[in-house]
Image 1 (cartoon, one colour):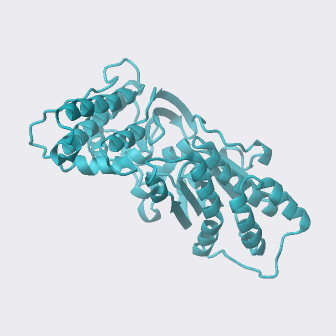
Image 2 (cartoon, helix red, strand yellow):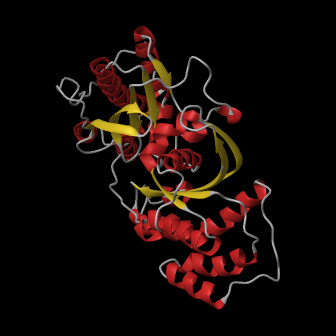
Image 3 (cartoon, helix red, strand yellow):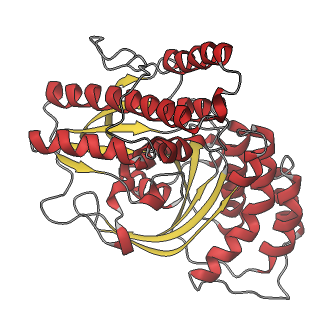
Length: 397
């Protein structure tokens, strides 16, 4: 089946077209078209993402991006004489009344398109920034209305869980490396840090989550303290890698909740510890952030603290629930030290370990297409009523 997938949960406008087959027992995917319009450079000047600005950029980007994906998938067919009927145009104006940047482009560009062959549209409905989510949802609903295509709502975090099913160059997981249940997933991103137990496909139980800042959020905030650009995670990692491993450490940061009896996380205190450390250092030397060695050591120790907590708690959860597979998803899953720590720990326990390929670790629409396929099968090949599609910023898995 052919799936149009749409993702606008934060600051990446992403659209893809995939072919999916094989069912739940042997899922297979082929990418026909895939495009992402990143807002990272736009938001970098503000040091973070502002929801209403993200919404506006999504509205400007989504129609041109859609056309680009259709062209890449070789399904773009334009009829210069085609136009919407008055009834269709009125429906579109009503559905996109809150998306003025999108409306004019939709009426001008989409009206001339011959209907592409999609079996279903998959769209992210949460979690995420609600203003941003609504752009993708309203776009999906409008396409579904004029082309009579069913829509499947997708949980963004389920997308991260399933993202490992698509490997490099469209290849699937090799034999012997297939996901075995029970499986545990460590989902780590800018907005989420949680441990999810899966007893089978689409059967989840959240066993731990952050009580405050997510790991990625803490990376971004500490990067800002160190006067590093946004997004902060890659910058912290780059700086930490420059600290000599054999150099004696003078800085020690806490490992929050590492000895707690549960699987919850907390990174707010770690972030605050860095803030106080810099405050005390500045009293002694106001130009402390001009010292590259000091910045490298802080980045190194901060990253070590986060990784140690994530690895320790994840391994305890794997042992308690006797999980056979560990799936790591989200932007922080690309952190090399986290990957190294989890690889070493899981090899000793002979646990299958999966990280997404780099392009699927951050927000993307390919994982939304995969999740849409699974949900379509679960719902017996039926879409959801368009009136039920709503943005849910705090949607849980």
